[in-house]
Length: 270
View 1 (spheres, rainbow, N blue to C red):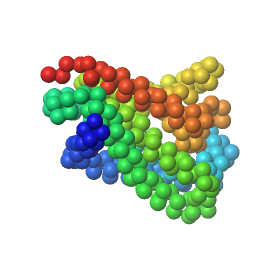
View 2: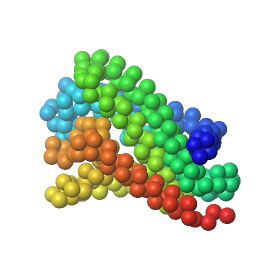
View 3: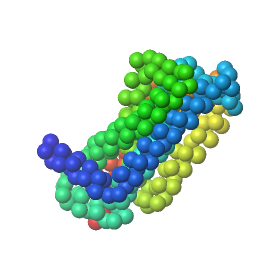
View 4: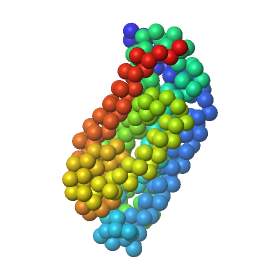
């Protein structure tokens, strides 16, 4: 079984790496990491930024500033990982290759677990690419602005967790791609909810005390910000601890990808 699983994982990685998508995404996530690192490096070290920053955004301490600079690209990176997760399963149904996949790996559960493992590896790989762009540009920017580029060893934890975050968002995309069989609809709905609907929902919940304390912090994007301890949007923002946020995001990924896997195992694909 272990041999079958490892071969299935290699096959999933090969499917991804033999398309043009992987290097286009790599370029995009590298540029996003570098661009946001430069932007946030200048923004959060500006002389015009006071205790609450421009537009009322708090600057945070030196560690939070460094975290935000080096993980700023995640705001684009997790959307790209969501997209990859959707495509990894959506393309199978769209091009009717899912039947071939299940014939090659007759035990569907193993085939789906291989997709999960492959997406975690893909997310980790893209996380490294993002950090190469953000840390190199961000460190130069912070040093040039007279700020501490590496204020605490805790920064290494944040960088490691950012790799986990991207892998988990790829699994969320996998679940969305299965729950919404039409690939185009899954991409539009998944990205639209993550990029527009959920942030607006979070803002609305902050106006409601119960929602601000007990609902908003558990939304995927809010949990993502808490995992990397980024600069907060407002002084009264309620945020989970990094480990609780990591568990929350992992649960979102497990539930969505788990439900999707169960549906795929039982669904007629012929």
